[in-house]
Image 1 (cartoon, one colour):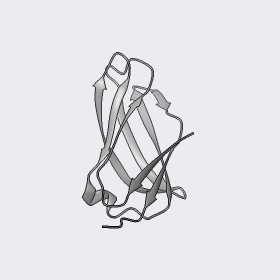
Image 2: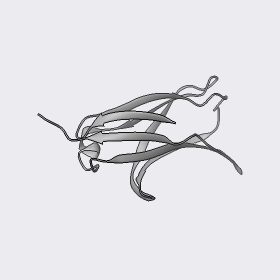
Image 3: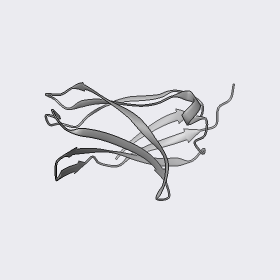
Image 4: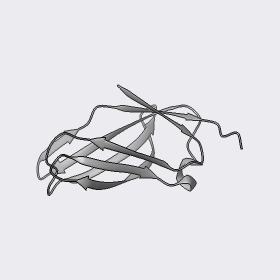
Length: 97
């Protein structure tokens, strides 16, 4: 399981490889804590053929995230086919400055 670290109030941006051609797929990602949704993330396909996607939340969004261990995954949908990524952990730390 991958763990990413983020300071609350900073822009969250990560590049993830899904490992399959995502042409025509709808890509979505959500952050949750203890099974409750915290926020939806912005997703952008960077390379269709190899399945590279960028996942992002702006600083104003992450400012509202609790300082704790959050979970996210990436859902790829094409018609009735739904593919879920492995769960990714985001350790949100308190900002200092």
